[in-house]
Image (cartoon, rainbow, N blue to C red; front, top):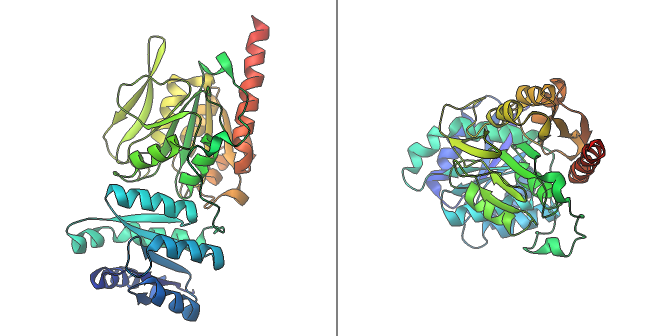
Length: 358
């Protein structure tokens, strides 16, 4: 079996050495070169034609984002970002995902050697995913407030007050979720989102989306009311679920064991939706590796929810959507660009039905 050939790009000799060691321990991959800066990396990529590159966010001579932007425009290929656990690192990493990086690994600020070794399994698994992912040319960066320039979907009015939309996503999901949320009207139903992300990144992600969408986007807080016109993102490293308290829905943010190896887990959110929201729920499964949430999405369908699943052609990784389809959870399988319009259409049709019954 041919090995996945990896080039490591990082200005730290220690990190380059550790990543090469982690990669070369695996039977199915090989570090074929390492570069201290993007200019050296550019020649190395041209000569060695790797399957995947790991790329440090901040480097001398040309920073990782400038390099990634040029790479994805001229020679799109699978890139795994290696970023630092800082607010600046989080913001730059989100920009890298917008530019087309498949995923990222957050390296610790201190204890880099032990920290990276402990992340070995995560790193090699993400390299495997990147090698199989669908790579797209870089799209223009979204601009804050750009939603105003796009034709706004018509108001949904009172149709959205009882409904809640639940979204599950993993690899490639930061941009897929943005695409869905940016196309919802300001009075859309509440949206609860579990996106597989480590601690330290979800707050920056929520803030970024809040500047790009008509609805208000925030990191979920335990015990807060779940309101129309708002989206709530599961904090990295914690599970998000929904509860009912009288006439109100509440967000529950809790620690706990990983579920399906994830924390936050889509399974946890979707199971609570099946139990608490039932036929007032709509579920969306977006791009991601693995099967997290597939079983619970079928439970949601059985409880009366309406479920949309992203199709293979528009996914970065068609893992979680494939498993949801296989579980019998999907009502419709759609390209990413059609999910928000279909959601709005569904809300209007069900709202009209309920008004006609009155």
